[in-house]
Image (cartoon, rainbow over all chains, first blue to last red):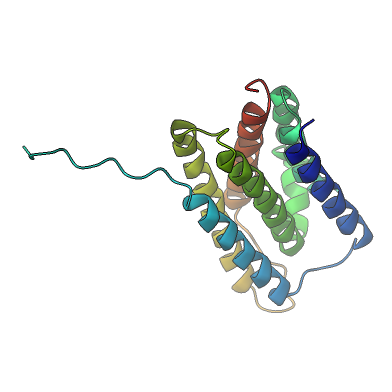
Length: 61
Length: 133
């Protein structure tokens, strides 16, 4: 198992444990807003890795 | 408790060369009991779905940076990521529109779109992480 997978699994397990400990916990509107902002940041980082658009055809039609 | 099945789906996606496990787990998530559990507490389920989604995109981003996701595959995965992101925005809108003290109502199409998207991301992760090294 490569280090990336191990790291992701560790993070996942911690998330689950956190959830179990907080059973019955309901996130506040602020917490929901924070995780929404984090999601947007993660998606933006993914989008930044898009390949460059192909160059326009030389000379035109 | 069944809401944690979304994590199971994600976990299965992390296991290299085991996409079948991911499909099986996600089928459970998409089952009627799974959806019912999500509807029972839409606020917490929203948080859980976001967490699973964020972790999935983080892993995919790292794989892309490690050149394990080529441009063609990147183009196939991106629409899934944006579809889940948009569905979670819809979910957030439904939560905000609910008056305090009332039980939020999130359209089932939204929760299904999220679970289906997480399944697809899990399968892609399994594909990128297993069998190509």
